[in-house]
Image (cartoon, rainbow, N blue to C red):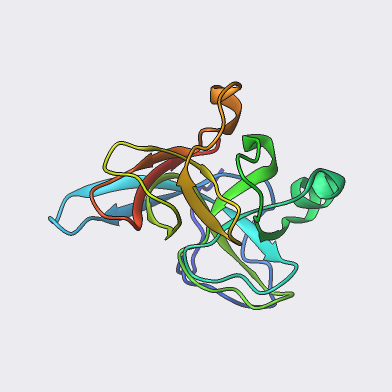
Amino acid sequence: MSNVVKVELTYNGSDQPGVIGKVYEDLNMDSSGNVTIRYYRVVKASTAVGAGDLVGCVAANTEEMYNTGLVIPLATDDTVKSLIMGVCETAIDAGNYGFAICRGVCTIKAAGSGSEGTTLASYGSTGSAGQMAGAGHFDQKALGIRLESSTSAYIDVL
């Protein structure tokens, strides 16, 4: 069984490039020339998705997200991880397919304050990740950590 999709993670198109729900691997070269691994999923944008957007669904659309990949940029503080698909590194037009990184280093749409090592969660601004606001249920809402810059993060929503 193959774990390779023969299109770039920058894909934005009407043809479904892979299996919905399957987790794929990406060998990514960081700015220092080190190769790291990232995991990603196929998603379908219900509305336009911007580069760095954290995408998922509201509870009423959970079935559509898991069965058809349908996602929107999240706009709620501390969304539980089961409603998050990942972070889109590139923009995806409404109705088109693309990819969301669900584990690994990625570029996020940052919101709020926080320094390197800050625990991230969904943030009230559409598609943003910011410092985790609430207490309790940490394991269900923490999606990653902020890295050295305000838009660099390591996420894990698997």
